[in-house]
Length: 168
Image (cartoon, rainbow, N blue to C red; front, side, top):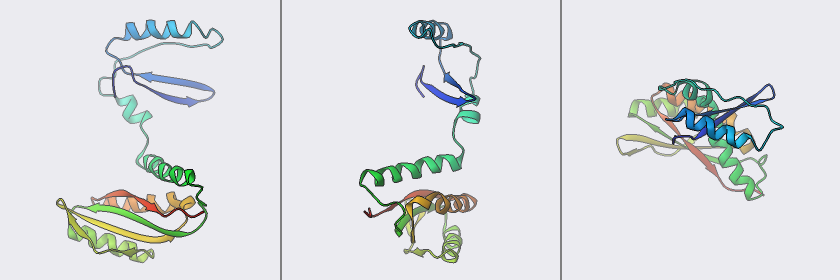
């Protein structure tokens, strides 16, 4: 994150802006100046040292599940720009990487039990790439992807996204 880049948090009717800066005095003066044009808002400026970025990583940064939901939403938003019917079932293709053949075999067993068809795994830069698919609805994608991502993490692997054809 660049200097003076902000992140927000909203709760209980308040919006908190978090900025990391090398010069808190200059930032505070800039914030005071900016808010002078908005006298109908009540605001406070405060600061504290957070050289490990703990507020950012422990409070503001999304959990792994929430981050996956964000990534899923990006694909869903793209489908919506093409007037996709998100409730229409269709084959959805998924991608994953695993550290070794044993983990890939365990993933394949897990996926077969859940009705996925699996392409032949391939070696890709020292990892095992696995592509798999099943008919699902994009509107339900979080319920499909998040358990798979959890299982992949247990196996030392990584979920690498999904895609599908647009259905109008």
